[in-house]
Length: 429
Image (tube, rainbow, N blue to C red; front, side, top):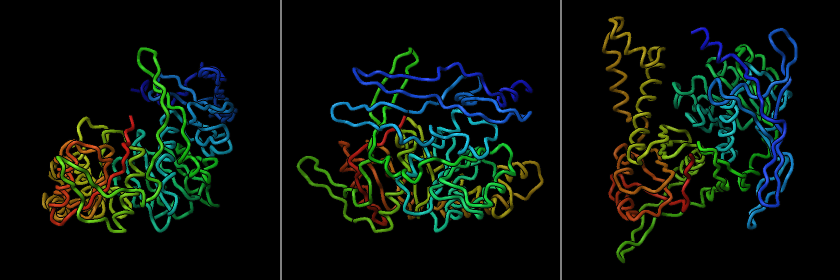
């Protein structure tokens, strides 16, 4: 067991080259490996790259694009000088904590992938294993973080919290009550770092150029997927066509010569939640369905093979997290600890019955939420999962042979639900 613990503390030797060159036809991209000179336990500076890859025992390296101008069939890919996570230097690594590994930085990167669409209001994204577990807007940054954390307090444990505004003291004080691996923001106001630094293993990172994050919305990067046989799949990164809530299209289709249209148009509040949810969807592993209410995630289903299944998983997670936060507010302990104490005879079963009843009555906060799907519903059973929980709006790409059935499901719902199409799938694998 001690050897296993040592594996997680060990920074691996990195044998990747200092430079990386990718040649595509007659065009060349040049990358430079990112390393940092950081103090060791004896105070001596030592140059290191990533701690390790996805797991201990996997060497890894971070490379920043420093030269090259890739244009393919008129598509201009991102150029040097736009780097954010790959440009983090010693100066931005305010506290390196246990020394960052691959997942720490890819968590921050995926949070930025979501935040680049959510810059109008103070916002917080908490990411775990490259998937958001809580995302929220707020009137203040502290409120945004508190809402994101409470959306899934369980999964947020040990995650990366990323903010779209300079971190202030009130937000830092909330963060200090929880356990996180990474906190990243465009800047840190005076007095915030000492509050955060009380947790010695926390990585505190200032993200360079975050003020230009919105610029990345329309820029493609070269996405490289590696196959287990050593092969590569190259693709353009996606461009989100929904840049504002007005870009949604009212759901409509033609089936067997008949026009089907959504009867009720979205309210302004529903459109705001729809835009918020579709923005979050850009950073969720497919297949995925999520529920959003008042610009805060309620339940996130990720990485499932079938759409009705992931819709049900997102509901299950919403109920689980809702019960947990009710229990934590009421008794100061997690819901699972409550169950254990009842099993051990240390607590009255009526305490759990109280939480379960409130969760059931409130339907986990799902009534009035909107449902977001990264691809079309091949059958109406998926959207019916959300409608039974009281969702009032649905966002989906459209394009299924059974779009008419899904539209009719919303029109027939009581109360009647609305639906918009994006005209674009948002798969992320």
